[in-house]
Length: 241
Image (cartoon, rainbow, N blue to C red; front, side, top):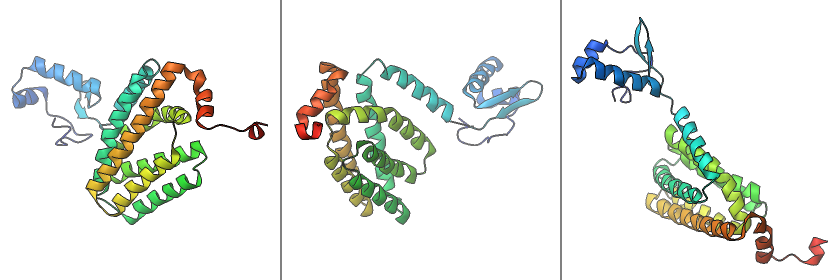
């Protein structure tokens, strides 16, 4: 806890085992066990014959481990997609609330550029989704919280493939564009309540599309996505030829 609160910083040498045991009112045996756990976690480095030193705290290995764990589950559990979306929804709502309180001109300019790219690529799915992802990434960045950004990146990367898959089945780019525009207007007005409400609605609608698509995929199988697409948007014989 003292390390996380930055009483001891990276490179600092911790007091002796005896001093630490007295400070925390625990036995030397309990202290050694605690130090072993901190060493495994990567928070300290025990140098035999020298002492115990605080290491640079890096959350990336933990995020990568979590990323790998979820990725493995995704291969076997469609329900995990829905859980991922719920997690992303909670993070996005918190991010936009924070962003609405830290508005800058460059931030708004970046969001406007993303929306323009979405408009220009309304009929080009991959480019449209990429612009939307950048829009949300900018919202994550403005909060300047490295941990939130890492977690958001992990979720976005995991959800990217699922988004491409579900939009082939139930994709409404104009509706998605309108949702991003509402979020932008709330942020431009520096109104946290409206920004949160707009983001909640956007995430709920997207989550609904995800659930709908997963149900169709589960019921008809992945090979039927083309048939579903043709039912939703008939193609004339002239275009096919």
